[in-house]
Image (tube, rainbow, N blue to C red; front, side, top):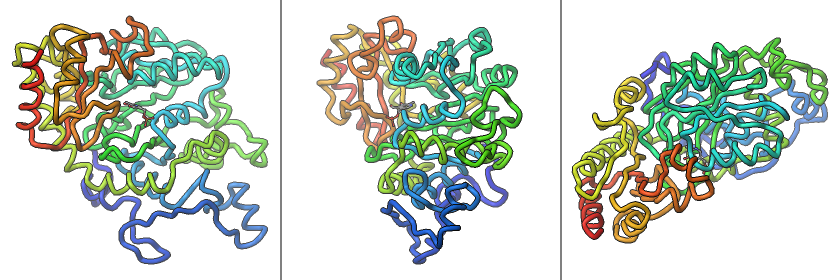
Length: 429
Ligand SMILES: Cc1ncc(COP(=O)(O)O)c(C=O)c1O
C-alpha cells in the first residue's frame, strides 16, 4: 500500500485523519455540527468569504464543519489533495463531471459499471446535453478508440458492481493521460483500504459512501476526491477552471487556488448551485464508520472468498465471478491492484436461470434481500429483476447482470453460517 503520511499508516489515519479533538469544546469524538449558518465578524469578513478571499464557513449547503472533517478524512485515505462530500454516490458522479462537462461534450464510460450509473450517464445526462460513449472495461484500447475531440473525462469502476470484475487501472489511466483528459474512478467496491486509484494515475475518485465506508447500511452519501495533479491551468478544454469567473470577480480557479482549484470549484459553484449536500448527521455516521473500515474489510474479504469457494464447488451453481478465485479471468489483475483482497461483492450464476434466482432469494434466511451492498449484514440480490431492470437485455449481459446472475454482498458474520444458509437454499432448487 502507498505511504499516505510520513508518520502514520492507513489504520491510524482511518481513525485520526480529519478528526482532531473539537477546537471549540475539546470533545474527543468529533461532534455533529447540526448547523446551517455561521456568523460573520463584520461586513468585510462576509465580503471576503463570499469573494473566496478568506477560508471559513458561510452556509452548510457549501461547507459544514462535520462534513469538512469527513472530506479531510476521505481525501487523506485516498491520497488526494481535496474532497467534496455529497448527498449520495450518484450525486458524487454528477458533481465529479460538472466542472468538466458542458452541452455537446462527451464522457467515455466503462460498460461494466453499476446499472444505475449506466442509466444516469447513458440516459439522464442527455438532458444536460452530455453524451456518454461506452467502452469495454476489459479492453483498454476500446477507451482509446472511444475518445474524440469532445471527450472531457473517462469514467470507470475499479472493482465493478455486480462484482468480480477488476479494471486494468494503469492501462486505462495511460489512455486518459495520453488523451489529456481526467480519469474518474468509482472506488466504492474496493474502498481505499484495498486500492487507491490515484496511485495508478487516476485524477479523480468517487465513492458511494453509503456502502463499506459508512459500513452498516444507515447513511446515504458520496464523495469526490481530487488528486490535485491534473493540469487545468491554460487548458481550454476546461473553461470552468481555466478562464476568469465573472461571478467571483474575475478570478481563475486554476490560477488562484492551484492544486485545490477543482475542490474549491466543487464547493463554491457545484455544491452551491446543484445543492446535493450531505447532512451533518450522515457525515458523522460515516466518520465513525470509517474508523473501523480496515477491520471490517479484512473480515468482508476473507468471508467473501470462503463463500465464493463454497459456491464454486456446489452442483446447483453454474459459475462464480470473484476475482480472488484462480478460475477468474480477473485473478491476475486482482493480485496486482488489490493484493489484500478483492472485496466481498461478487456474483454467481444459478442453474435454472431467472426462476431459480427468484426461488433462491425466497429460501435464504440469514441473507437479506435488499438493493444495497457493503453492509455488516450479508445481502443478496437478483440484479436482472431489480437494480438492472431498466436496462436492455444487451446492457444487462454486458454489465454481468444476466437472468441467472445472483449478486452477494458478504457481511462480517461467521462464514460457516453464511455457507450453511446458502447450501440449504440452493438445495431447495
Ligand atoms: C459502484 C456504485 N457507485 C455508485 C452507486 C450509487 O450510490 P448511491 O446509492 O449512494 O447514490 C452505487 C450504488 O449501489 C454503486 O454500487
